[in-house]
Each structure stands twice: as structure tokens, then as C-alpha cells.
Length: 370
Image 1 (cartoon, helix red, strand yellow):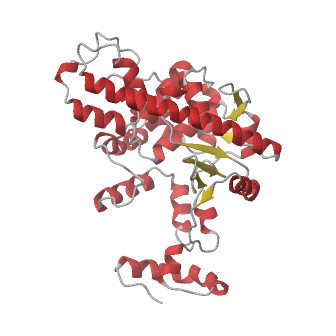
Image 2 (cartoon, one colour):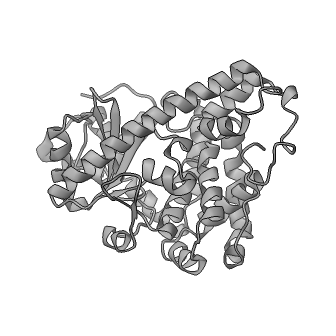
């Protein structure tokens, strides 16, 4: 595999035998164009010119995008600091620079920042003052804040999206407090103004949980794990403690099994006990179809079979306690309930009682009630 660190140019698979159109589709889908371009750009004798050119265009486009995101990130962080809002950047340029030493080698489409939940309103006001807009979403009893973990803002002129997180993961996944993460933060030198991002062990666990929630349908996420394990001095004792504390050991096992399968990622002896388990193997097996079939999860108009398969996967990756909490959360009203049966806001509390009936009604595909 071209992305494996052990490969030399002589060990790469016979390139002349490839279906190059399908190859480009795979590279773009898994968001690894820059890494593949760097590997193949000096091999014009075995790689068709149009393939190199297509990869170069994606590499160039991503480089411009990352430079734009870097500039905007620095601007936002300065404004947040001036307003005494502490922010942790979760992905984007700091992570690209930290993992690869070059922001152009990792693809990102937006900026993700974590703030304290009590600072959400001030953060939103600042983004509005800078020209960002928020998609107006109908909510019932503050369901967005209860069910979700981030809100997206978009700048129509700059064409930049910023996701503001108040939790690392949606409920019922366990999370570290902002204070805990802030105490272990690092500062990126990707800009003149220091940018705060997560400590090594926190970042590794976050990337694993993020990839697991998305079924690892992009190899880029597994490549992040491989890159971090190979190039960072991880404190695996502390990392294992974090995984245990936040009930994410099975997800760690799944991630390392998949990373080893695709990239021969080494597994530290401290993690052997949670990687080589039946549970981790089951979760890895469940994720493989999402990787191999080049699916697009989290987009509208998914085939019903895929939607059902993904929902089953998400439920299976939860612990017993998280499954119970998840089922309880299902009873929290949603905007779908409001669209199914309209009530005045003063009576929204009745949706707690009506939700099971409204959910059943929708399953029967009945028309909307008024």
C-alpha cells in the first residue's frame, strides 16, 4: 500500500496494472491526495501524466485551503483571546503540522474549535460580528444542545466553515472536561501567534473516537493514528488510563487493529491487552465494509440498507451503560415531533409524553398532523 511507511519505491505494487480512474476516485474519497502525490510525483515512467496532474491539482488546492484556514484560525484565536475565551483547536492546520510537519500534507475542509459550554453565546456573538452565519435549525426544548456536541457557522465571503464544539463527542459518549484538556494543552508554532491544541494522549484518543464514530470510512483517519504512533513519544500508561476512564478501550482496540491491518502500525506492549480482544476484533470487522465499499456516511439520501447498517454499528460500539443512556436520550423531544404534531411553546413539555406515539406514527409513514 502506498501509504505504508515501510514501503520503498521498489516495494510499491505494480503501478502499470492499476485502474487509474478508480485509483483517483479512491484517493479523493479517502482524502489522502497530498500524501499519494508526494509518493508518486517523481515516478512519471510508471504513473500516467494525467494522474500526476490530477493529484497535483488536488495537492495545490488543499495547500491554498490550508493556508487560508491557517490565516483565519490565527485571526479567530486572537479575537477570542481578546474577549477572554479560551479555545482548543481540535483538527485543521495545527494537527496537520503536528503529525506531518507540513500543513499541506493533511486535508481539512473546516476549522473545529472547543470552548466551554458556558462560553457558547459569547463565542457565537463574536462569530456573527466577524460575518459568520448560522443555519437556522428548528429545535424543541434546546434539543440541539442536549443531543448534539457542535454547531456549524459559515462565512459566505471567505467560504470558510467553523464548527464550535462544547463537547468532544455526542452523548452518551464520555468526555473529558474542558479544564482537564486545557491543563494538558500544547501550543502549535504553525503561526506566529501560538495556537492551543490538545496534548498528545488526549489528541490520540480524540482522533480514535472521532474515526470510530464515523465508521473509519476514510483511510485518512487511520493514517492519522499511524502517523502519530510512529512519530510521537506517546505516554501509553497515561493514554491507557484515559481510555479506561472514558470507557473507550474497545474503540482503541478497534482503531489499532484496523491501523495495523492497513498500515502495519506497531502496537505498544502497554496496549496489547486491549487491542487483542474479541470485542475489539468484532468492532473492527463491523467497520471494514464502510472502508472497503467507499461509502459516504453522514450525508443525506443514503440507501436504507446502509443507514440501518450504520445505525446498528453505532449502537454496537457503545458500552452497556451507554446503550441504556442512549435509549433514555431517545425520549428527549426533537424538531421532528414538533413538525409531526404542532403544539404551542408553552406546551412543549408534553412532547416528552407524546414522543413514543409520534415516533410510532412516523414509522407508519402517516401524513403530518396539524
